[in-house]
Image 1: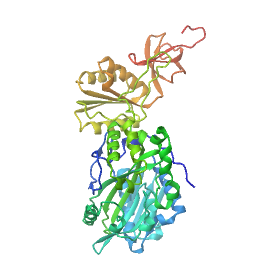
Image 2: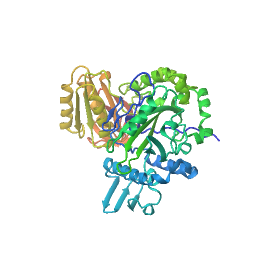
Image 3: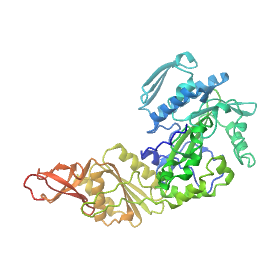
Image 4: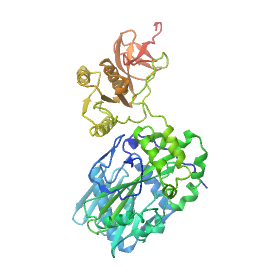
Length: 513
C-alpha cells in the first residue's frame, strides 16, 4: 500500500543550517571532496561546523530508524571480521558527540572502563572496550541508534575497499542489504558516467589514502517527494508511485511535496582498526521553502533544468525534472523586508517564517540582536557568518529597547551606517518593531531593512490616554494594563510603522475610545 508523503517541519534552523549543495549553475558527478575542518557559509546561514550533526529532528529520526530496523533487520550488518572496526567507530562517534555537544553527551574513561551518557535519550551505560557483553547490542548498532547519520564501514584489503558493515535506514534508492560485502567499485557500477570519466576510480584511490584524524566530506543530492527519509529499494512499492502522482498535482501541492534532498557524506579513517567510516547524513527542504532563499531558487532551477537525461533518470527525477525547474523559475521571491499594511483595522505586521538571507550585493551590514532569547543569538550569528565574506559587518547586541541606553546605542549605530548598508534586526516583537521605527526615523528605507521576530509575547502599545508608547504583554484584540495610567486598555488591530506601536484605548466602563 502506498502511504501519503509526509509534511515538512517549519523549524527555521533547518533552513539556516541546510547544506545547499550547488556551487555552479550546472552539475556533474565529481569527487568534490574537501577537508571537514571548516564551516561552509550559504545564502541562508551556515553548516559543517560538526561531523555528527544533532538538530531538531533528532528524536523523530532516532525513532524512525528504530522502527525501520524492527521491520527489516537487513538494514544492519556486521561481518565477523569487522568487530574491531565497529568498536573503533562507536568510540570515534562518541568522542565527536561529546566534543560538539558537551552538555548533552558525555564520554569518560577510567582504565578499561568507559562511561557513556546521552542526556537527550536518557542513556547511561558503562562498558569495557572490545567486550560485546558489556553493551545492550553490538557496538555499531548501539551507537547508530543514537545518531541521525547512516554509517557504512569499509574494510581495506588486497588494494580494494569493501562495504563489510553498517547501519543504513535512510538510503536514497539503493539497498544496503544487497551491497553488504561488495567492493566499492562494484557498488557504484550502476552510476552513469562515473567509470567513463574516471570519477569513481579517483574517489576509490583517494579514500585508500585517507589518514586518521583528518576527516573529509562531500555532498550528494537528488529530489524526493514528501519528507521520506527511507526511500530504499526495499520500499519502492510504497514511494515509487509518487513519481507518477506528482505530475498531476496543482502547483501549490507540487512545491510543498517535492524536496531537495542533500546528503553530507563524511569519510573518516578510524585510528585503531584502520577501517574507513562513511557517514551519510540526509537533509531535505521542500521547494516552497527553498524558493524563499532567492540565490538557492535561481541556482537550483538552472541545475535541474540543465541536468543530462541519463543523470536525471538515475536520480529518478526525469518524469518531473522539467516541471521542478519551471516551478522554481516561476516561484515568487520572498520580500527582503517584512511588509506592514497600515490600513485601519488591517495593520498587523507580517513576519517571515525564516530569517531573510543576506544581500550579496550589499556594501556593508549592520546586524542588531536584541534580548536574551537563544534564538536571537542563533539568527544573528547566522547573519554575521553569511555577511562577513560579502562586506564590512558590524554586530550590535542590546538588552532591550525599553532602556534609554540601548536605544541610544542603536541610534548611534544607525548614524554610522553608510549608503548600501543592509540592516538586519532580530529579537522579540516589541524590540523589533521599536528598532524598525528608530531605523526609519534615522532615514533607513524598506529595501535596507530586514527583520526576524523570535517571539510575539509582547508588543509596543501607544496609549491614547497617556499619549505615550509602552512595552505590553499581549496581542492585538486583547486587553492589557497600561504601565503609564494603569487603565485597562483594548489593543486595537491597528499598527503605525512610523510610531512603531499599536493603538490602544481605555476599555474601562464609561470610557470614550
